[in-house]
Length: 191
Image 1: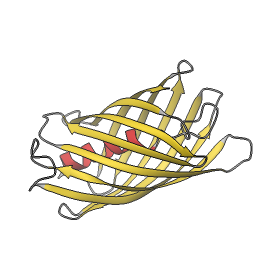
Image 2: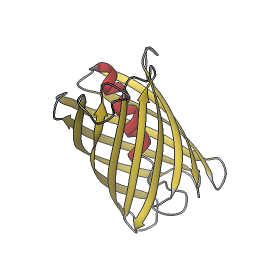
Image 3: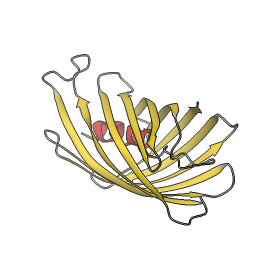
Image 4: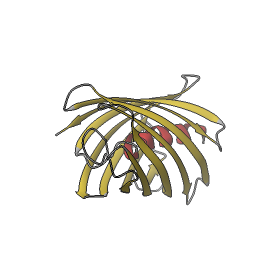
């Protein structure tokens, strides 16, 4: 169960935190990205690929695929991110994301007998610290039909635009159910 939670929350970080609003925010941007995550003991890792696209001002669509380090688990998640400028000056944004997806417990039989539907929501605030750096604070709650409650996760993420197209980020999170901290690293390409 702990491995599923590590996989999910590392993957979730690469899915929802990275949506931007304008300028150098991640909200409202179209990008693809890669992520790697681990608990603080570095005994459980996960890897992910993500895609985000702006559907309309204030609305993003994200898709994320993540796998555990031994390759026997895979997770697919889809989310909509609704966001709004809090300041009128394009510096701080609040967002809400309903989340839905699947966790497959017996890869490669993806979505056959051994999977679990997951659902939940995430709320957060993204604040632009500098013209190229953003801080994201979030809280997410996820539940599943077969695995049970995956708890509440609190996250802090910092993203930095290295160029006009390349973004790097790091997130530290804590999950209440697993009572575990995790770290995730991101690389994103805006196009």
